[in-house]
Image (cartoon, rainbow, N blue to C red; front, top):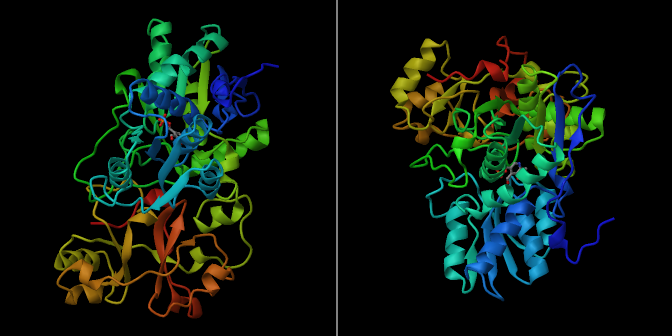
Length: 471
Ligand SMILES: Cc1ncc(COP(=O)(O)O)c(C=O)c1O
């Protein structure tokens, strides 16, 4: 066994593991790189160590200083452990969407965790980024890490991840597949592998279906870490400077449900427990592999472990509550049996136009209509984060603006949730007559509290891939 003088020396040096059962029927050799074998449990330990060491070297961070970052968890964990070892204070701004396990891990390293509403445009003074940057500017001795635009983030992968993959495959790697968040991993590793192979290695960006990197509509997704989303009210779409699109040959878009299915299967067929963004990478890698031969070697980077998602992707209740297909279908009547197809109105639409459009589509005056943020285009049905409330065609008729007609929504309900579930039976708030219904993480239908007692509606709910009814 190797012997180390500090936990910092254990960052990097993760192995490659060949997939056999999960990759059955595919011709190339497929290896995964389990980045949770880093001490903080993710690929981001590498960037965290590099960024912090660079800040020490250039004087941005001095003894007694404070490390400040905005993160969906893993970068904060990496920074927190490095900072703990080197004696710095760490303050992390993250969202309530970050898994409970990651927030608890941050606190365990002594980091201060500030929870911020993530669904705010980047330039807004209350956005995670604005809050983090402001806190750093106002705190003496603070250094704002800014992983999205920090060149030491991709540099960590040029120095470590790329050389490791090249050496461990004896230079035989032909394809490298990774997800893209800040872009640090794919840009640095991809650049190294491209250069080491004289341009032979193909670099594939695996992206959640709605992420803008692969041409999505920018709406939210279920998997944490990977992809690039845009708040509907954002002034501009700003891509990270850590991302070098020149090294990426192509992007492959992957649906949340497929990514979740992939990691669940990986755990059961290979004994490898990976997180949701790993599922995005795996699905993309398997798609790439379909067109390859026995001479090819595909390396898939798995950013973190499924242990951080035992309460989500590996939890049957969570899957059901969010409309994802779980392992066992429910017995008895479910929410989908009583739900109606979702009709949408965008917040900025003129009420008269909305009424005309909805009436032409067959909506009656007292039909429920979900009010959502505006988007130039919708690839899939709306994400629950885009819901502003509900209204009716009749109320829209009388309202000066859509916002004036909005009412609060009932609980979010998964399409396969039994009607006997406490989330349904416990739905009593008097002013919430309508609840949004989720199919595979998207809002495809509505459930009216009144219909629960009455006869079932005639309209069948659509599936997530049908998109939603917006004019
Ligand atoms: C779970 C997970 N997957 C993927 C990524 C993307 O990595 P990168 O920021 O290097 O593009 C991250 C980044 O934080 C992550 O936490």
